[in-house]
Image (cartoon, rainbow, N blue to C red; front, side, top):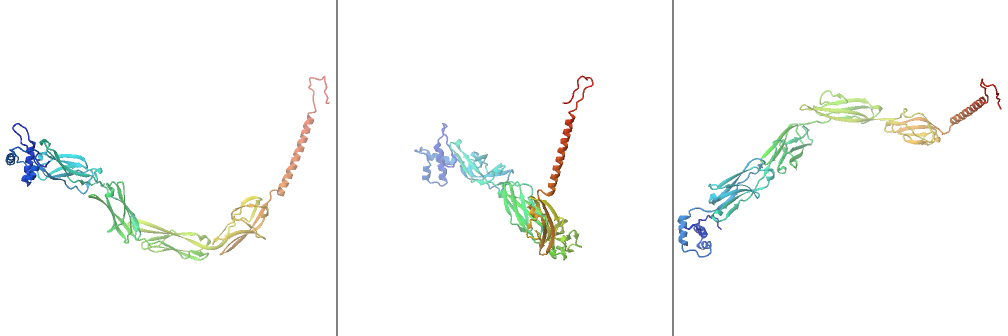
Length: 486
């Protein structure tokens, strides 16, 4: 079957001769350059009637002057590079050639789904427009146009031709600006984190995000998760003053941007120094707290005279100054905001050992075979070694830990605390008492005597009561019988 309109000749009796249509089609091909041998192959099988050639001439000259043929091609006009989700989109199908037009229509296809159908106009090329509203799920899907020349009413077939597909890319981006997170105040030559993110993107993996500090692009790590795009970078500046950080997000033909200022400052110090960190007792020590220009320092609550000047403190090291901590506070005002920094340092004073008399009693009275702790302590720097030895022997009693007291522990002990700075000593008398001392025996004897006395008194009392029971008296009304004791 050829892509041609057929001219069907009807006889007076109303019957149609389908082979005449083929004759006409073959003749039209012949006129356009088809050879007679090719024309013969287009003839229907069987010998044609005698009037074939005469009829063919009349058909060509008088009967069939109507142009015929398939459309040369059908095209889907180029789609936009990106299409916002939810916005209306006009898709145009272009049809080149094709007749008769009243039998020609165009169908818009989404993948294999038919979205719409419209007839083709008379213009050349014909343009047929369809309006669609893309969704997120339409992203990356194909659209195409299909021309349909329907000649079934003329005894022929439905001729279809489909254009090459075009892929649609949809996107969605919120109206809000990206969220930029970073410290407002930066110290120069110090690295700081910068984070920028934007939610509600589709498709987030197709979006682009950039971070910049002034004219310097930052090397950011970009991560997309669901509908969120996040960029994280580390930035550093070497110039003081106000600078601008920019976060730029692009998706499709839309972009969102956030610009914010940061304030770079120089804050040196504070530096807190001791003239001697390990001073001997009685040595003068100077404490100095200093910082950079425009910085106000304060040493142990006492401020320096003017910003930029150091603060000092002088003292004579004593035992009480050992492990003393000094504090230096520095403040700097940047754009109306006060920044703080603190430093601390500890002083060590070297002094000789001393045994704490309040915690180490000079006389102890303990029971035999009981647990006790000798609570003697000594202080000094460096830390002294403390031990208690019984005089006249090398017997050493534990210090600071529990031990079982025995009877032979009784005696006088010399407790000594020694270090490289000297030595301190004191005597401790330990009196350990046995389980049955003389006092207990005396008490037991007294108790025994008291027991015997109590027993004798009770016996006398019982005897007296018994004697009282042997005397009887008569009642006054009966004087007949006299009773006597037996």
